Each structure stands twice: as structure tokens, then as C-alpha cells.
Length: 474
Ligand code: 2AM
Image (cartoon, rainbow, N blue to C red; front, top):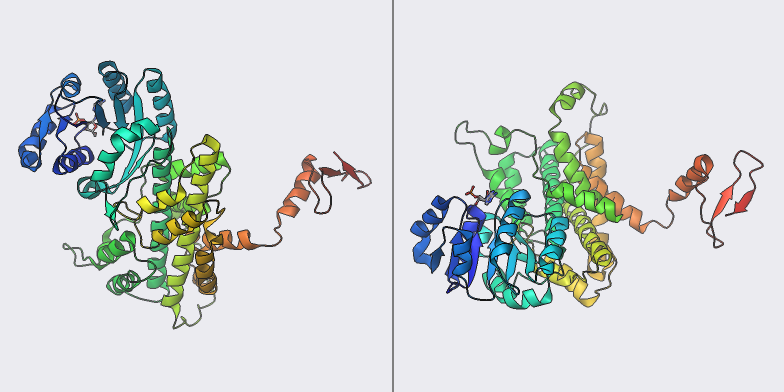
């Protein structure tokens, strides 16, 4: 065999990844279930590098140097299992299968264990950046063994995005770690987009700005701490006019947000881990609620605020920038906390600084402030919450008063801002010296004898609520 690496599954992502490999000088063997796609790729882009077309998986395997490296880019789920099964029968011990699809990390753990039994390496790899990223340099989050990464890591680092000369690719950790981190990346993306959408809504409904003016606001915000791909494309989308009607594009799009599932996965796993991600959950639920068309219809005549909203503060736009920044920080804090919790649970030893570093380029949540997050975890790997980092604590303490004004204004105006307000509640919960969780414990003890701990003594206690209300140690 002469090809350095193979790719099977040549839909847009797989095709672009194969082209990226070829353009970086790797002779790449290409295969697709329907061979028309393979032929189309080679005839349209064959001049970009060395492509070795294969009609079957057996041919693909035969065309590869040893140890063989095959990237699977087919639909997640049963299709991936089917392709893995067929490939595993053709490969030899020491060969490496990579799955670059959006697999659930539990599937990746299962597949890695099964293939390890057969002497094969399995590298479940998160890839973010969409079609363009796959072609020009995505953010790559590979999991799997250290030995496998030693083999295939340099290739992945070569085709990844680059920021400040460093590749946006790091060995995340064993088995499912890469796909887990990719899942949380998408969860953070949900939260980030929800916060941006709420900010747009408030600029329109409260500040009375038109979409084109709001595009300008986002363009300005993109010059500062908020600088990021999502803020940049928000300005593009808000500035766009529907060619058919001449109306702002955002006004002709149906207001029902859809989802493919990675946000929901993130929230479900957070619930299992017992590590809260309220900002991500609010974003998932906000999309679901936007799509609850019948419920929205039957509730549409419920009253809004009966008192006229007060004067809009002249500094409202600046306040909103601070609120968006604070809530964004809270969402990232939640995502990193969740990765840290999973890392402990599964023994992954995920490098949080490295994770923040590889998200600086290539991926959808790429943002300037990820530099600071990387720095925070580099200087204090044991950091328990991003908000407790010196730099971010200082930033959020400057933003928090404006954030409160915005959440108050949104409530008074009757504009839903679940992300902005949930983020503030997260912040206030974490900094509270006393929480009403004490009362919850009292209630649980009252109706269910669930016991409670005391502030002044060790042990678990129960009050005889239906008797003389004396306390017993349990
Ligand atoms: P196709 O072009 O033959 O449909 C995204 O759908 C990619 O996954 C496509 O390349 C598609 O191949 C591939 N795919 C989907 N299901 C598959 C399966 N069961 N076996 C192999 N490839 C599959």
C-alpha cells in the first residue's frame, strides 16, 4: 500500500477532510458506500493532491501503509457500527480506526473496548468547524490510547486549524474523552447562541433598534472581549436582507429553533454526573419551547407587563454587552466544570488548558477569550470554577451590576431572557454565603425523615416532627 491514511464516508465533512489531508501532502485513500461520491471527489478535486480511489473497504485497506489508519466519516449510530465491523475484519493488530463523526461518547467507549480486545486502536475524534473547517483546518479532539495518538496525532495536528503557530488539536484522553469534549463544545455553543439571541431580542424590543442597527452593535462588540466567530456571524445574519421581500432576513425566518441532539446529550450527561449546566439546559429548553407551536398559540393572549416600562437607560447597550459577557463566562464555567467532573468519573485526566487552547481556532465557539481560559487552567490546573480565576473574577465583578440591570429590565419589559437570568442565578448561587437549601433539607426531613446535617456538629440528624419535635442523631 502507498496511501498514508484512508477516509471512508465522503459526504461533505468526509470529502472535505480527505481533501484537507491530500492538500497537506498525505496520499489519501478514499472510499464511499455509493461509489459515485468517490468518483466525483477525485474528478473534481484530484488535482489538489494524491487520491487513491477504492471501490470497496477491502481495496481501501489494501492501499494503505502499515500500521493502517482509517478515518470513518459516516452517519453516527448503526452505520458507524456496521462500517467498524467490516473494517475490523480487514485490519490487523496495531492498525488504527478513527471515528470522526458525531458519536455519543458512550458508544465510543464501547467500540474502543471491543476493538482493543482485537488488538486494534480506536480513536473517537471530535471534529468541529463545519464544512469549511473540515477543509481548511478544524478543531480536532481525539480520544484513545497514547500509542494510537503517537501514530496518528502528527497527521491530525497537521490538518487542524492553527492559532499562534500551535495546532488546534490535542490528545484529549482515553476512550470516549474526545467525543465527550466535543459534546460539551456543542453544549456551550447552544448556550452561547441562546445568549446572543436574547441580546438581539432585547436590543430590538427594549432599545428599539432595527436589525441592521443591531448588526452594527455586534460588529462593535466583536472588537472587544466578546470577539468571536459567533458574534461575527451574528452581525452578518442580522445585516442580511431577504432578496425576495426586501425585509430583514431575520424577520422572514420561522421562529422555531431545531436541534440535532448534542445539546440534549450534554444536559442528560450533566444530570447523570450531578454537575449542573443550567445555561446549557436553558438553551436546549428554549429551542424546544420555541417549537412548541400549539402551546404558544393557546398562551398567546396571556397578559404582558401592565406597567409601562420605564425609560430605557442611555447605557443599555453597554449594559447588555456586560450581561452577555458575564452570562457567557458562566456558560463556559459550566462546560469546563462538566468536563472536569467527567474526567474524574472516567479517569481521563483531561487537560482543561489544552481543551481551551484547541477551541481558539477552527471550531464554532472559537473566541478571543479562550486564550484567557487556557491561561487560567494552565496556571491553576486544579481551578474548581472558572469564575474563581483571578482574571475572570475581576472581569465578572466589573460586569455584574450591569448584568443585574439587564435581567431586571428584561423581566419588566416581558422579554424572555432565560439564559441571561439563569447565568446570573448561577453566579449568585455560587457566591452566596447561605443558600435556602437549608430549608429544602428541613422540608425533606419533615415529610420523609430524610435527615439533615447541622452547621455546628458532625453527623446526620432527624427531628421528630409529628412527636415532641426533639432531635435524634441517626
Ligand atoms: P452514501 O453516500 O453511500 O449514502 C453521510 O450520510 C455518509 O455516511 C455518506 O457518505 C453515506 O454514504 C454514509 N453512510 C450512511 N449510512 C451508511 C452505511 N450503513 N454504510 C456505509 N456508509 C454509510
